[in-house]
Length: 265
Image (cartoon, rainbow, N blue to C red; front, side):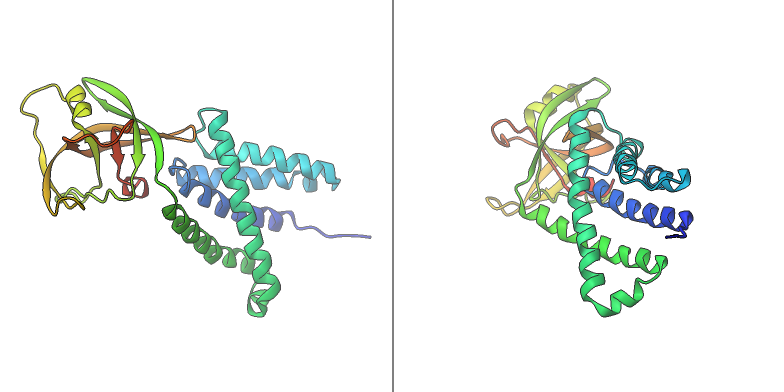
C-alpha cells in the first residue's frame, strides 16, 4: 500500500497546535515565556515530530521517541526552567491542556456537523483551534478563581537590600494606584521597615475599601523589583507599587500580591 505524506502540512498543523498548547500553559504559569520563545518552542516540537517522515521510517516506536524528546526540548526551549520541580509543573499543565484541547477537538469534529465540514482542510483545523483555545483558557481561568488563593515565595529587592518572605496571591486585593492605574501589592509594616530605612521617603496616597472599614488611605511606595516563585518558576516585576499595612496580615504571610500584576505582565 502506498501513502503520500505532505511533511510541510504535518509540520504546519503540529506547529499551530503546539503554539496553542504552549500559549495555554504559559498563561497558567506566571507567563514567563515571550512570544519569540512560544513560536520557537512550537517550531522545535513540530520539527521533531516530523523527523520520522523525513527519515523515511514510520515505525511506531520511533514516533514515540520523537514525541517524548520533542516535548522535552519544546518545554526547555520555551520556558525559563530553574529545576526539576518547575519542569514537572510545566509537564502537568501540558498534560491537562493536551487532554482538554484534544478532547474538545474530537467532540466538536465528531458531534457538530457544521464544524466537521469547516475542519476538512488543514487551515480549517487551525482556525477552529483558536476559539477552542480561547474557550478553554477562560474556562480554566474561572476554575482557578474558585479555588483557594495561591501561596508563593516573594523576594522584595531595593538598592539597600532584599528580603525573602511568604506571599499570598490574593483575589481580594484589587488595589490600584490612582495616577498610573497599576496594581498595588500590600506589605506588612515590618517588611517596609526592613527595606525602607531612609527617612522622608516619597509616597503616594492609595484609597481602599474593606469589609471592616468602609474607606481608608494607605501609603504607597515604589519597589524596584518583585520576584515571585511558584512551582519552581520565577517571574520578576519591575517598579511595583506596594502599600504598607500597619496591621499584621496573617500568620506566616507578609505580602498580599495583587493578581492583576500577573495578568499585566
